[in-house]
Length: 285
Ligand code: PDD
Image 1 (cartoon, rainbow, N blue to C red):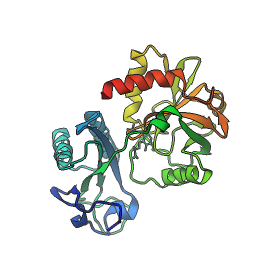
Image 2: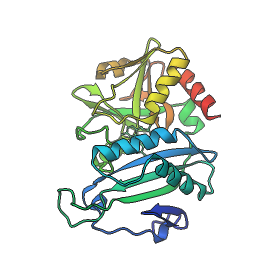
Image 3: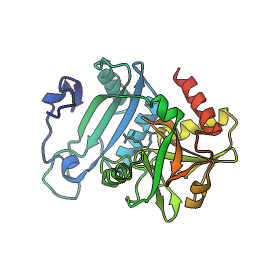
Image 4: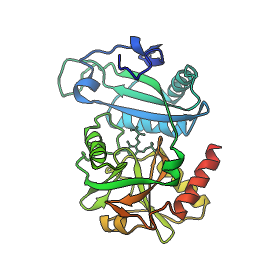
C-alpha cells in the first residue's frame, strides 16, 4: 500500500463500493497495458459538487469518442458520484472517475466483447492557497509534443507527465505549451491571457482539453463586462500579455506573474484576474 494513500477510504469498482486497499483489477486491464481509457475529476466544496453535470457530460463525450459503452446513463453516473461522495468524510475533496476498455488478451485492436472497468475514488482537495492567489505562479514555455486528440480526457498522460516534470526541473510552478508557435495549454490546466482589458484563450479544438472552467470563466467574464476572444494566441502575444491566468478543477483560477524568467505585466496579479477571481469566489460562497 502506498504510504500516503488512505487504504480505508471507500472507492467504487465495477458496481461495488469497497475499501481502497481491497480494490483489485487485472494486470491485463487495457488501462494498465495501453492507457486505453478516460477519466474525470469533479471538485466538491463543503460536500457539494461543483459543475457535476458538465463534468459528467464531458465524461460521456470522452467515452463516446473512444467507443467505450459502459451501459451507464447520465442519471446512473450522477448516482454513482453522489454515493461515492457520501462515503467521504472530508468537506473539500475531488471525485476521480476512470473508465478503461477493461481486461483482455494483449492486442491493440478493441476486444470483441469488452467489459469496461469503471473506477471511482475520492481524494482530499486543497483549494489554492492565499499565496498562490495573491502572489501568483511562475511558468516557462515548452513545445507541445502531445498527440492530436487533446480534446479527449485520456488517461494516456505521458506527454502531460513529461511536461509537468519539466516545470519541476525548471523550478517553476507550471509549463505553457506551444504547438507551431501557438499557445495550447498547461500540463493539466487551460491558459488565458489578458491584454488591454480583453481576455483571450486558445480555441476549443483538438489541440486542447475543453476545461469545465473554460465555459465557466467565459460566463464570469461576460457578467463582469470583460470582453473575451477564443482564438489562436502566438508566443509573442503571451510574452507581451498584461496578464496570464490558469484554470482547472484544482487550480480554480490563478495568476501567472513570471513567464520565462520575466515579469508578466507589472509582475503582480492584474485587474482582469482580480475581477474573475471575485466572481469565482462569489459563486463558490
Ligand atoms: N486536469 N487541460 C488539461 C490537459 C487538463 O488536464 C485539465 C484538468 C484542464 C482543465 O480542465 P478542468 O477545468 O475541467 O479541470 C485542461 C485535471 C484537474 C487533472 O488532470 O487532474
